[in-house]
Image 1 (spheres, rainbow, N blue to C red):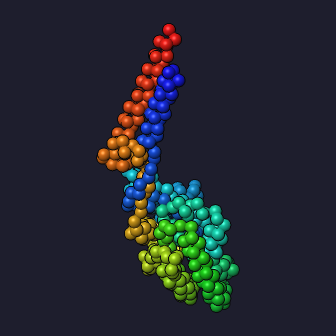
Image 2: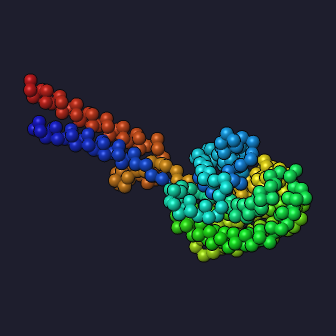
Image 3: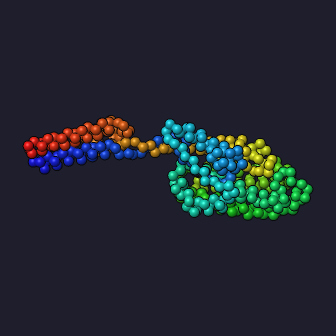
Length: 339
């Protein structure tokens, strides 16, 4: 008899535990949100915020377009979930460098977990060749652009064109390689920025602005032409048109620096932000699920699932009390029997 009572008490305890577990299972449901909960930024120094005030203390300390969007989305999503920015851009990166980084696998986890990907690349494919020519002519600032230096540059224009054409061929191959790799690791929307022309009003070197316009224009056409490639689609963020005729005010070209200034980053944030929010995003919201067994017992009249803190917790408490009562009864009976 005692053994039966003990077994009964044990069964009651396990039943209570099972009842509790049935009502403590965490599940997730998809909830639509207004912005991407996670954003991965890839590319070069335009994306890092190089040259902005505060950059020297860390890229998260400056008002780059990535950080502007981070603040915006953090505020928008605060009532639902947190926002996470991963800025994996690297100063000086060319398209070849970014492709190599992707293929190394270092970013695979980020690619699979992120909600959207933003890419700024190609500037160094073009501009490294231009600045190499400036360096060879001994020019590091606008004040050094003088007769002898200009003459050196003019004699190198044809070589520069050939180098830029070579780099454009490599860029196209690298671009398709990047998008193919990303598509294989992530199904989230991808955004690729066009490159603005910082040399449109750089008249100190005759012919240079014409070459830049032609080659940067060609680079942007390559970006646009591959946006709809089957299986590797991406959205083009048209940054270039927004800088047209405004290079003097939106970049640091007056200091022979092609990077966007604070106003330029605001413009880029606006362009990229509009493209991003034109898509739909979701967040996997955790909630407490009620088991099918509990539903069969009549606990699921309202819904097969309930949010945490609902009636499931009450049922669990009742089960626990019943278990304690059964255990106490068994103890009293055993006690009396011994007496």
